[in-house]
Length: 380
Image (cartoon, rainbow, N blue to C red; front, side, top):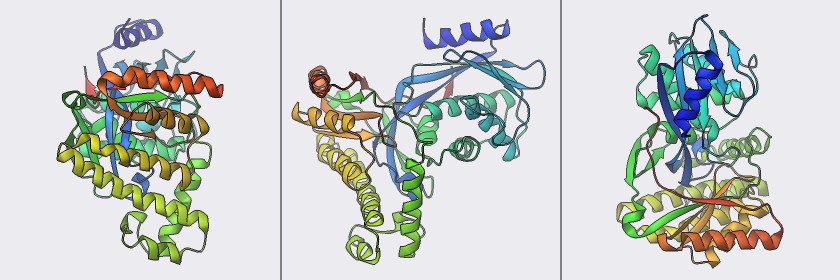
């Protein structure tokens, strides 16, 4: 059974009728640019082929209801405020709330969700849920919400309703990515450029390795990193750490009297430059040359931002030793996935090398797949 068929079956079982339509939104992998989004910086994600599907139909009682193939009971709610719907249903209620806060009349609907986006893997299953619900509500209600405005509404739902202090990367990727492209996003201006990212034409592949180390943002660590970055920017007298360039970095670090702040600042400033360098190489068709930038990004996340865990460090090292051009953790950290840039005919061997390394360390076995840049949220 396909994911779309599963969503349809869940809708029929929960509501006793056929859905009016189906919508889809993808998870994402961030090629490079970690924790730079909430520092007004640069990111370069692409959409995964794995998607969340929403089967949607009109409500019969003026309320919103949502069920999921991975949850026991539907969640039903009326007009709510943050904190009134909790758990996984908060991501849906938050989108309704954020649209209403933006001045839109949101149509009451019934939704059934099914997904093959891995949960807790750092590939943004939550943004996929928010983005598919947002896209469906906009289409069903005929709401005037330009594409470039949609990620901020979904982000507001996650920040203020769910309570996760994420940047705008995930929602932008799920909504605005295009097939065969990576999304170069300026998180200050929201300007985007679709960067060609057809790895198969170069004989390359991105191998995504799920470390199977649980990944969670709403545990204080993500928020702590964000607060430290904001404090560093304030101490340096800039709007955000994006405003510090690499040549200015040594002097900026001297002005910070806290070693943690210095290391967090160094990661953000150098990571922004790595994004710009990666984009430049991809524009020139020099895809293999981005490998060292990916690996340097991982080292920075490990040593300066301190967001990796042993499972992802082992996966990165094993991938590099098996011949990957570069490898890094992707996502907010503390678990989740690793991506490795490999020759396409070496993807299986790289995955096997990581699995062997996990076995030697007595970690839970990883799962791996080759990621191809897919489309953003759409009606099916």
